[in-house]
Image (cartoon, rainbow, N blue to C red; front, side, top):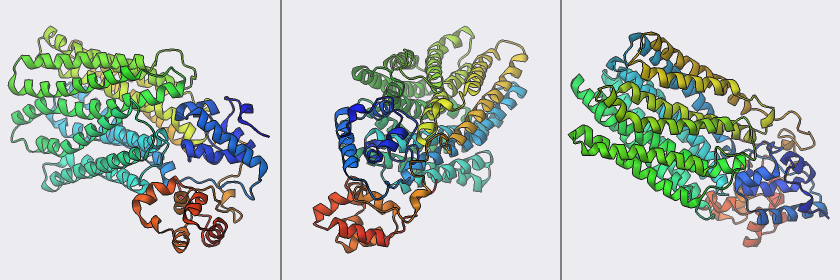
Length: 600
C-alpha cells in the first residue's frame, strides 16, 4: 500500500502528479488551483508547503487518503484540469502594468527627465501637467496594477479560499486602464473645457477600480476560515490608504487645474503634493509590500519565521509615523510654525527605524535556504528602502547646509530612491519569483536577469546622486542625469520582455504522460463526483439547468454560489440533498459541453 512516508520533500510536483494523479485535487484544495498548468508548477513539495503555509499534518493525511484511494480504484479517465478566470487574471494585470510602465510610466518619465536635463531646471511649471500624468500612471498603473494582480492571485491562496467575483475583479482592470489613459490625455490639455472634465472622469474611473479591488479582496478574505495573521493588518491598512488616495485624487486634480495664478499653484503644490504622494507611496504601496514581505519572503526563500511581536510594533510605528508626517507637513507649510518641523523630523526617523526593523524581521540579509534569480532584487530593494529613509532624515540638514528652504533636487532624489529603488525593485523581484511558478516554467532554467538588475541599480544610483549634484557641479552632471532615465527604461524593458515571455511558458522537459489541456477536452473527459459544485458551474455550460432540475435551488443565490459552492464537492452536495450521485452525474455529463474553457 502506498503511503506518504515514501514521498521525499524535494520531489517536484509534476513528478508527484504523474505517479499519483489523484493527489492533484488535494493540492488544489490547499491553494494550487491553476498554478503551473496541467502538469503543475516546477517546484518541490517542500516549497509548496512552505509558500502556501500548509499545515503538514492535515495535508499529509489528505495525501495519504488520496494515494490509497487511487491505488484501490483506477478512475475511468484522468482528472480534468481547468484554468478559471481567477487563475489567470494576474496575467492581465501584469501585462497591463508592463505596458503602462513602458509608455506613460517610466518611458514618459525618462522623456521628462531628458527635458529637465536640457533645460537644467526641476521647477518648470510647463512640465507640471506632464509630471502629473506620469505620476498618475506610475502610481495607479505601474504600482497599482501589479499590486492588484498579485493580490487577486495570491491572497485567496494565502487564506485557502477562492477569489470572490472574478468577473468583477476583471472589470477593475479595464476601469483602471481607462482611467490612466484618460488622464494621460486630459492632464496636459486641461485648459480646454472638454479635457478638464475628462480629467474628472478619469479620476472617477480610477476610484471605481480601486473600490472594486478593495471590495473583492475584503470579500475574499472574509471567506477564509483561517485564523488572523500578523501581516493581515498591513493588508487592511494598505487598502484603507489606497481608498483614501483614490478619494483624494479628484481633489488634487481640481487643485492643480483651477489655480487662478502661478503663485497660488506653487503654494498648493508646496502644501499638498508631498503629503498626497506619501498617502499613495508609503500608505498604499510600501505598507502593502511590508505586509506581503512577512508572508512571502521567509516562506519563499527558507528564512526563519518573522516575529509577530516585532511586526505589530513596526505596524503601529509605521502608521503613526506616516500620519504624523502628513499632518505636520501640511501644518508647517500652512502656518510656518517651527513646532511642526519636530513632527516631520519624528516621522522621518520613525520611518527609517521601521524599515530597518522590517528588513531584520524578514531576515532578508541572512543566509537563504533557497536562492534564485529573484532574491537579489528583494535584497537590493530593502537596501534602497533604508537609503531613501536615511535621505529623508538628512533632508533638513541638507537644506540648512545649502542655505535653502526646500531643495527640490534632494527631495526628488529621495522620492526616486523610494519609488524605483524600493517599490519597483520589489515588483521586479516578486514577479520574477512567482510568474515562473504560476506558468509551470523551471525557474532555474530561465534568464538570470542579471543585466536588468545591474542596469536598474546603476540607473537609480546615477539618478539619485546626479540629481543632488546638479545644485553643486557643472553641466556634465545634467547629461548624466538625463542618461539615467534611459538606463532605467532599458532595464525595465529587458525585464518586461522576459516576464511577458515567461507568462506563456511551459517547461519543455515535462513528461507527456500527464494529459495536456488539449487532450483533456476530448469527449472521454467527464465530470466526476470529487469536483466542487462551483467549479462545475464555472466550466461546464448547461450544468446550472441540470442542477436546478434536481432541486439545487441554492445555486441561484449569489452569495452561496460564490462561497459554499466552491467548498462542497458534488458527492457531498448530493448526500446533503438526498440526490443520487450517479443519476446527477449521468445527467450532467449528458448535458454539458466539456470542451469549454476560459481563455487566457
